Length: 161
Image (cartoon, rainbow, N blue to C red; front, side):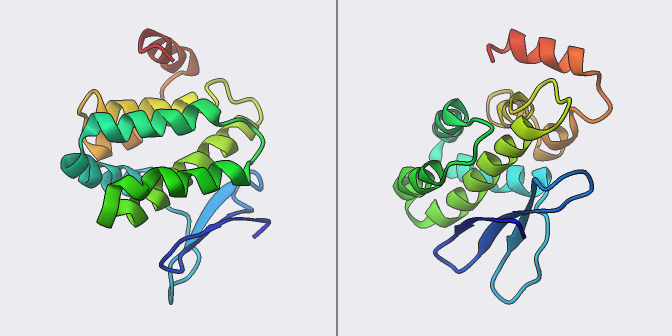
């Protein structure tokens, strides 16, 4: 692993490491498990469960607050702020912390991806489709695959981001 992202309250850890193309792959290590790369589908399913209990608009608005401060530079203060932000989710705070931190790291990675046109907007598009457009986690997680960047860019622009 090249960069520690966060250790969560249950002992789970997130880190950036070497992926297929660069050093911006996000890895998760749960206690007593091996390092693995979490997938968008897993993340979106987790957010969907939380949204059903706490409201999709609340979860989406909190995600957007993280999106708005995300840049190409990884910032430990934002990681700490996420932990504070999710306290309001009570018994679900840990899972929200995990997935919001994962999404934050994924957006940083997208901002650093060479030749990427959409950058962090690709993650916002998926979360928007999940929580605002009410698509399934499977559809939202795979929607952009195989689509032209200009089309996704236009869709993001039409949605206001």
